[in-house]
Length: 213
Image (cartoon, rainbow, N blue to C red; front, side):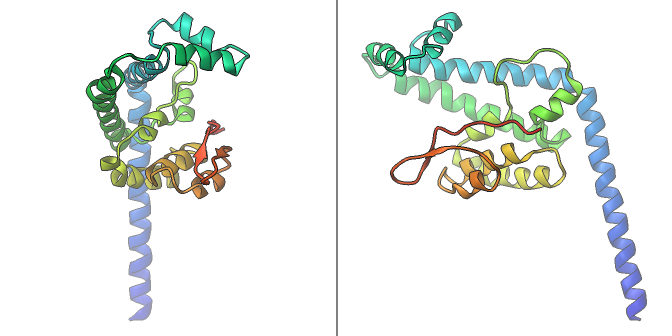
């Protein structure tokens, strides 16, 4: 009786493993077939995300200006430029409320949908099939790192699943899990080799982004 039960368990496990692998293979094929439309959307979302956040700092959408400021060797020069152009009104608050937060929600929801449909679109996975140039520092992980708390439970579910099946690397996994801990659990950075500077309270700041090989 015990032998029969063991055999049935082994058969069930084998069938489940085969089914799971087949689902992963199907998603990979679908990801390859849809790569152009997926990247097209993610590129737009990324550029929009960065442009709004840069506007809060530099008060301009002119990339030539923002790049020239970011490339200044003198940190004091950058700070002087930023502080000299502080908003004189509550526009920054309204930009966050009316543009950045709503777009963060939309982009988070789209990345969740894409991940559930064809697996997590990591930069490494994208580069496997997409041969056209990508925006500088482009990485879809930024959408989960900019996500709001209402999405964190679902994002954690995706992170665990996609890290386990190989679609998400250590850098992305650690960065995402650190964010969904309320940016309090530095262990996710430490355990995944992500460098950072901690402030006087031990909170991680100045995260050094890394790319999974």
